[in-house]
Length: 75
Image (tube, rainbow, N blue to C red; front, side, top):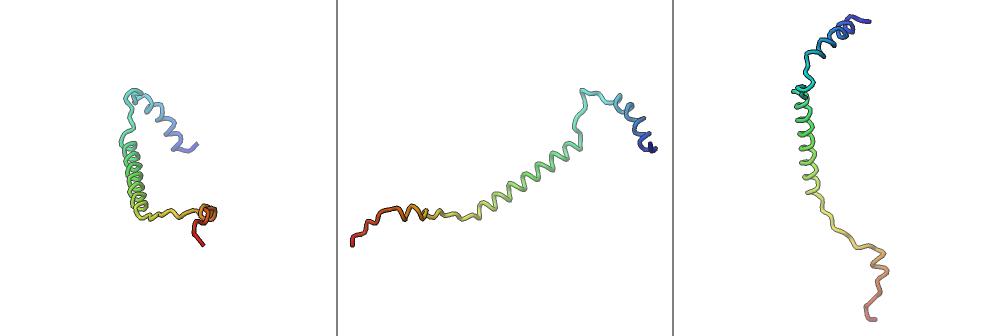
């Protein structure tokens, strides 16, 4: 066992006793992760909105429907 592992195993019981399980919160790291995810989602939504605005979709008639339609022209 290395010296680092020995130090960690000795400090873990001390750290566990100092935290009150009813008062532990996510803290600053949790806020930073949540804020980064929120900014990422906001950026993706903005990009998607911009790309969807560029779409010019016009539906073409189905070729089978026009071939099956009877010819109503007079000869």
